[in-house]
Image (tube, rainbow, N blue to C red; front, side, top):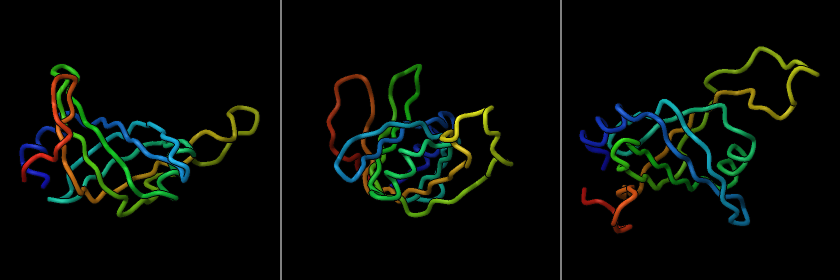
Length: 132
């Protein structure tokens, strides 16, 4: 499913848009960094995600992840579920008065099991999964 062509594309475009929803279906969009293909079915990415993203993906593991080359406005959309989430780094403390208490304090890495791959572009396209 995650071909060598997709692996090369992601290596050159390691920023993603991550769409999640809460338990009522309210959507939320975030960015994921350091996107990489782990194997034929799994993507990994990380960021200092806000509490909304962490809560959404904790309650509802369904996720859409889009990676796009900004110069060509083409890319891929990956539909799947969170397979693993873990803390990759934690800030050393919180400075009351110097920073708001709700800023991200943990670099969270998500591993997604990809169920479908679709084209993602600004031009004419279908929402049909790409052939494997």
